[in-house]
Length: 465
Image 1 (cartoon, one colour):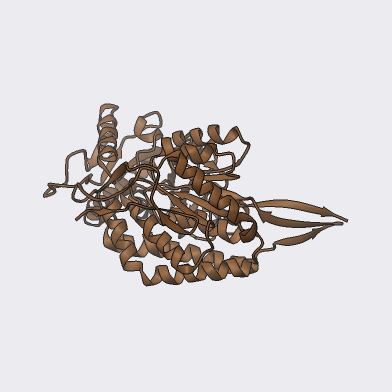
Image 2: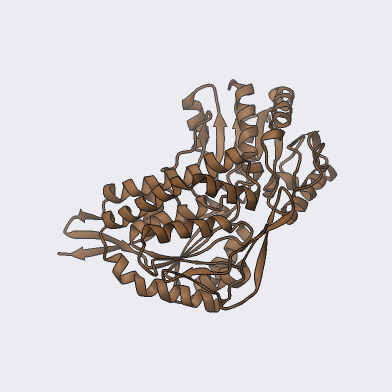
């Protein structure tokens, strides 16, 4: 049975939007409509921004400890509702139950805890010679979030903005919006003052653009495609507002000679297929020495085929057809299909499922080596020298993430320093939720998570004595 969300959250109240138009939310496992959400208009954005503007002076004046106390209540409530949150995320974007609970909800819980702790530890003031440097909230923040990690991407923006003393208007993705609605119920129950947090729904070209262009929004934080991020920047430039962008990626996993090849390849397959490949930092290009190529393809093929049972579907029909189109293009341009392909997995009759796919004989000029696919498609590329591996890894308009495997940590770090990318996993290093996350080049600007993520939402003022 489909659930109808017929209100948005403005000024501390669930209220009817200005339009009666709605957007269908489709379960990618069943291809059935599971919910509808309002298609808001710029008039709704105006109301949400006005509420945030009114609430800003009072919220900015609260102590960081008071802000953290409310965020702690929200985190505790989210922990209590983990199962319910995981359920709506699975319904919206197809994440398997284990992934929805452990990652899609577990990671936001960790992020919230990190900012609660940071509220006490952060140096809000410091002396610089004869000046006192103070950090103050940037103002009203417009947060535009994607569908692939629907709760995590909200908490990445909302938690540091609130701890900084900003008020926020969130536009969740219309593709996977139910997590946002449930989270705002939690924020309401936690007792945030009216206007501090606000939620609107709708499409990017209508609601997202209204937020980015709004003269009373002081900062816009956007996560999504590079194309859409470029548009956000254009609209925001008219009012010279601050812009933070976390965009696409085409990350390289470089396996140097002498590394534990089997371990590196298996970990690389996992890194390429995170969230069914629907992860901006996915390690979608595996670079191996030419002498190691046959073994790497063998191990990657086995790992990919073993992963099929753990992967969920792609989020919708558009993404499904897009990924299948890239697979067809890879074959047309001369890449060799080691496993997978564009056909539905055996036994699957419904849902947007794509076979875990591995290409070999991929060269740097091929489309599958250059464009972000956002599906479970791995390209294995051969190199002959470390210099060539470095050149291939950096030969991309993106620079979000990457990985290096080497016989020693020192050798891996030395190579990683030459990569033009915002993060690099060293010999299988784990994701760190308090390390800065963000990209070089067309992967965006600004950083999320940890202290660096908090600083995005702060202005710096020098008091001269």
